[in-house]
Structure formats: structure tokens, C-alpha cells
Image (tube, rainbow, N blue to C red; front, side, top):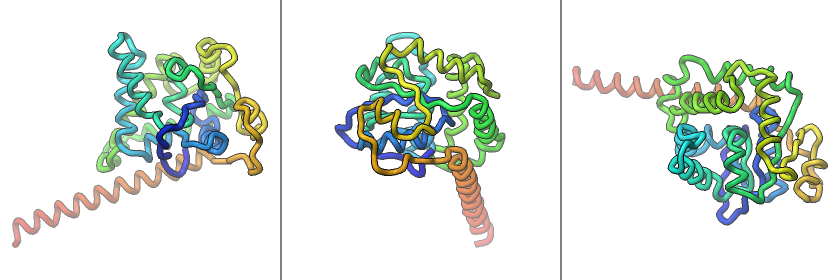
Length: 259
């Protein structure tokens, strides 16, 4: 998760489908792609939580019609994908990682790159994200915040996507990670799929994209710390909004009865 949502740049060619699961270095990967492709990158975690409310609402709508069971559903799914990724050079993180089948059809010339990490470390990392996303009070606390009031519904939609693809929601296990890798190998045409660890730096990524190695350090963004900071910030903002609402309501009631 980056520090702020990216802004689309009209006319940008879509070049990379980020197929790596969340918590596999997708934030660092996104920044690296931004540098190499010289264009905005759509990082799902950042765009849905820090972008305009239409972002998160669009994904909830798409996932409610996914996997498409008829031509009308397929048309809607592809329409939303075009709208969300128009003006971006690449897309990473959820829900992109679970929509690879649709994206390789929509962008037949795009490279598919899956960020990877040690499966056991990934499982441990996902535990914290899952716990934070399932706190019972989130729906109430976040309700005053446009966009974020839909966060719980969005997470639930992602859970259904994972259940369909991997047969489990949470707690996640190595099975989810391994099934994702096998699903990509079965889904992506030969020659279009690349596996990449952000620990390996510029070399392998630049080779896969046919780019020169930049003369700057490879981006290092700690997704876990960013998620924790964001969660604290959103809860704080939600509580402040509720305080303002109740304060305004209290003043209105006092004014009505005593003035």
C-alpha cells in the first residue's frame, strides 16, 4: 500500500498485469513499475482505500458479477476493468491478482508478473491483515467516511473471490499461496508469465520488461507498516467524524428546547 492514490494519465498504454497476491511486495513492485514504465500504476490496496469512492464501489459491483455466468455479466466485468485501468501502465495487488483470466483477454500484449515470497512468511503476514479487516466495529466506525464505509463489503467480496479460486477464505494457508501459483501457470499462456521477488531488485524485473536498470535503489515499501498506519488513521478519522456528528446533533437539540 502506497502513500497516496495514483492519478491516471490519459493515453497511457497498459503493459503489466500484476498477478502477485497481497503482501508479496506489491507496493514496492508498483513503485518499481512506475519508474520503469514512466506511468501511473494502479495498486489495488491503495486505490480502493485512498482513492475516490467510485473505486471501491466499482470493485464491489464487479465482484458481485464475478465470475461472469453470462454475456451480460462478462460485459459488465470488462467494462469496469477498462474504466478502472484506463490511463494506467500497470495494475497490482487485489483484486487484480484474482482477475488475471479476464485481464489477459482484455490486454493480450501485457506481461503477467507475479510477485512471490516465502509461503510461510506470507501466511504469517496475512494473519495481521485478516485480523485488522475483520474487527467487528469497523462498519460502524467507518460509516461517516465516503468510500471507506464500503470497506467491509469490499473485504467480504474479496473473501468470496478467494473462496472460488482457492477453496478457502481465512485463515489463509500455504494451500492458498500454492494454488494461486498453479492457477496462474494453468491460466496464463506460455511466455507471458514471470515470477519475481522484490528481494532480487532491478535485474530480473528489468530483464523481463526489456528495460535498462535505473541508477537508483530499488523501492522498499513496507506493506505491513503502511497498512497499520492506514488502519489507525481511518479509525481515528471515523471517530472524529462521529464526534462531530454527535456534537452537532447535541447543539441542535439544545437549541431546539432552550432557545
